[in-house]
Image 1 (cartoon, rainbow, N blue to C red):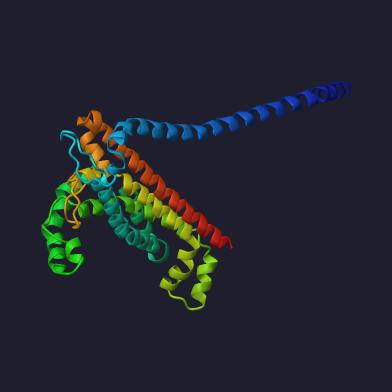
Image 2: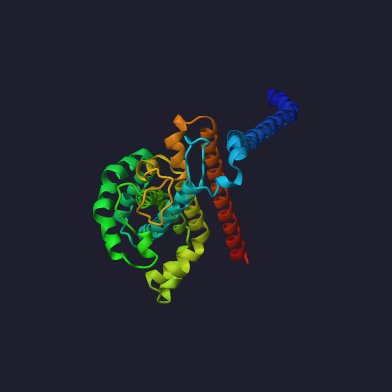
Length: 332
């Protein structure tokens, strides 16, 4: 009994000290964790700011030389005396290829996601899901090589002549689908982009479709709705914020894709009304010419990079504002 009393007194005496020490250790760990996470977040802003500053510094000679006319000048002649550089062709190609790619990828991606979550047999979901994940993991240069050696010849020999013949003489569409067929064109690059961004739209859409409470779909089926009516009236409205977020993520990828587009777009700075004509994008122009550039030519390419950065920023910012409005509307 005496020994137990002595041990109890020792524990009581050591208790407050140990408790304070433990609380101090917890507080130190919490403070350390807080500053590590805060510095990690701040480092992102510092890196982003460093990228912006370096782009502005590198692009300043071209900005000083060409001014605002750089945006609407089509000619690109760095070897001329004096050099003439204009970003209109790359900007046009970037916007057109991204628009066509999203026009193809959005309905196909959403269709695959709806099939996987609502209609696909259980035994088939895993193979299709793995195939989509594999598409996302293929390097972009492989897409470019496949587009150059396989897809380009097929489109030039089969698809493009068919479309040119159908729309020949049709106002507006006749100019959009005008010939001659080409292995390298805006449409070919857009189709490659559509395949590349398809996994982003599909995977994110599948994930958000799975968040729909089963009771909502069961209630819709219970009152006699068809699968299409359930998807249109329940699944899509419930998940529209997530779906739009996935689409904007895919659009950001399409705007900045480089190697695959460089292989198959033709790298022509001329602007044509036909989507079957060669063209170029901002990223493709930088990739194809930067290694051999210097002086004002290099500064012009850096200015193109700055324009791509600004374009992507505004697209993602607009998407974020739209998502905030949708969330606010849904909350009301």
